[in-house]
Image 1 (cartoon, rainbow, N blue to C red):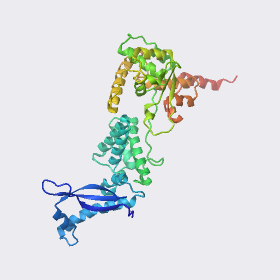
Image 2: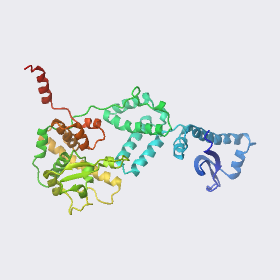
Image 3: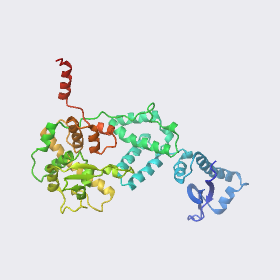
Length: 410
């Protein structure tokens, strides 16, 4: 038993209710630090003394047993922990019988993401937890409730609701992360991990065609629109993204003039996705400032061009992280609305959205013979395997030409 951490059932006489009752709490002492944990019991001073007396009556013995059960659970948890911390203890103690529940870990990690200004990711975790709770129709889920059978049924339930395989993955990847955190914290044994290769694999959807051919890209870039209109702006933002290494909307709207070197004609920035991580030596993305890109900045950018000013008029100083996410989401929604109009007028075979600029950039680079290593670096990916997801397959014409070569014997 870990004798450094001590427990005691304690009547907290600092807080008295209107009925002259005091809350019963569990007191845990570790390295001279004390923390108190609520129970559902409230007694007067006399009642508490009678209940905890060695010679109490049968009724009080039952009450005493309920209190000592709480302390027993705490002691068992302390015994399980190789290295006691209050945080680890709390995650298990707040669970029924010391069996850690997933809710607590989700909530803790979501708070961490929010404090790190990763609002969109935090929202993804909230959606994931709510989906699991809805599936089970309960308020709390224990880690031990989730096994291969649970995950298969959950996947089937999602599909039956008309959701895609991609949606299943979006909801289950956060769950996998939460399992990993619990195991790393020694709260959960690896035997309970259901995502091993020989157990359950989170399904991956087939990569949809999201990259345009060079001919279609030309049509988009030279699409005639009324200067200054919403359609004109949507086309220019898509063009800016395409010419700037497929820069996503969050990074575009977070650009400041200090990220642009007009003399050396380059844009240099850290992706918002990696800026909030704890990775060391994050490599900035450097993009040549083409005349076409500069023209878009001068056309739609904020004036005056102060170093600390945002390039595009979507964000402004002083906005909360939540407000920033909302602004970017709304701006992207409007842009996609008008891109869809362009796509339909051009009769494109892929829905034109802001996301296709990134895929088109990477795929065109691949088709032009650019190395995957360079494409990966320009996209800001940490691994080439991630880049592979962005690279669309070659056009059918290219495949046909390659197949014909099999019969060229001369």
